[in-house]
Length: 109
Length: 119
Image 1 (cartoon, chains in turn green, brown):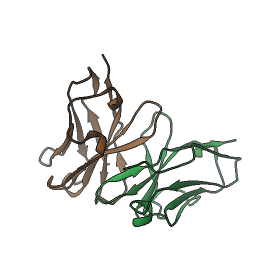
Image 2 (image 1 turned 30 degrees about the horizontal axis):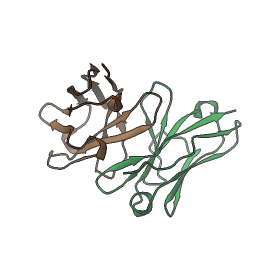
Image 3 (image 1 turned 120 degrees about the vertical axis):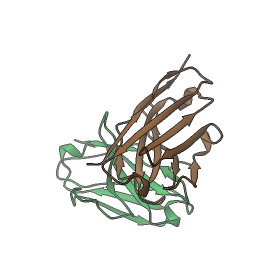
Image 4 (image 1 turned 45 degrees about the vertical axis):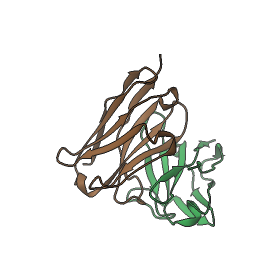
């Protein structure tokens, strides 16, 4: 039950693209296509942005996309906007349990 | 509208106990796995526990096994977390979150309730 590994910070200018990585093991990310990503603004509850690696819930802009290769998942935010500035967390199914990444603070310059 | 409302947080001394509740509305509670997720001040999210629709399967993060117990009452549309032998490191905002299956994403969250363990 070790936490997934995310970079603590990422940044980009408005309109640019940024990719956040999330590295796990064959027991979590590598073993299942059940990776999800959450956006959290300060003082707010997390919001689901991506599920099952690359699917977007209704209402989430298509600027948000997800992918996976081996034990590493990635979240890409294209066409950065000011409101995208937030903390982002990856999460993976690990066989009846779940594990989060440590979180990445995304700054829009 | 889906609503999850946590309650029961507060200040408790180390070694003490607390019971959190989560009242659900706006969806068929008995059709969902339910989860507790916590966030220590200034830190990241940590999945704590989940419980199957009928309450017959429960899973916990290693750090709370033997101290915390998750339960539910489908007749009352409520989720609970009994926390015993509390430690300073259990200080966090505790969120309840729903998921259709144990592998499903957390698609709705409550606003959280703060638990502070301190003497």
